[in-house]
Image (cartoon, rainbow, N blue to C red; front, side, top):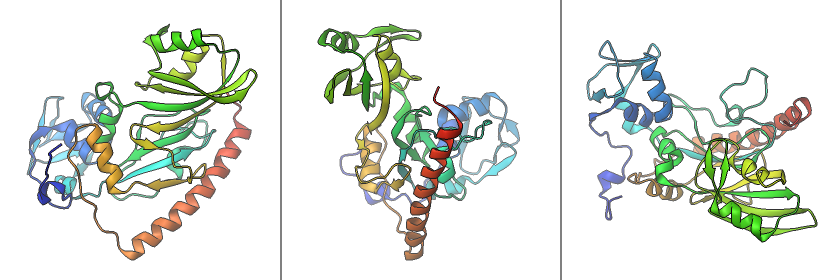
Length: 303
């Protein structure tokens, strides 16, 4: 990140010329999907540049004609879109996929509606895990926050059923073998509780599937509650009710961008009506999300 960025560097409303950037990077900036997903689209032949199938090494320049899934992409809009990031307090019983054949509610059901953009989840939480989920319209930001090379830590509050001693905690910090290789907590500390049911806070640096649960289970204890409370520099706000979301301000957005070496952006002002619509949408989403999660929990038992 530049130490003293100019106004042009901070202003996300100023169009920037596309100077032959890779197709997956450009389309991620457009908020179409994460870079990894776009790479899959390219491999599947779903992206065209000037009438020809794109390759992973293809580059896009200003004036190119780009089509994704049969629909043209307006390149001139890529650098004029508002960078939006929301934090969502995910309830148990809600999944992180865009759709579900079993009819379970998803986190995307209750987020604010977008025009010419889409919400991209920064990592996932399984159906029985609650807590902090970050979603953004910026595919490049999402990709970097999830990529292991940037070493973004995730902190979880975990309630354990079983006997935990200092030797076990040491093993978990040194690393244990799981089905997909060695995994460990970079930090784990007790946070209260009684008897065989105690709370711990555990930190991991990767986003492997059910990693926190599998680490504890490798030691012969059970996870009875799991809640993510932090992702990088973003904490789950204590004021945020379960099933509710709120938008990050641009100070917080730029702190996230700084973590993954992206330049800062400047806020675009919202009209008074946009602010009112946003407040109504947030309240409605919160109430509806909790009702859906409760209904799902009754319909679909824990696995």
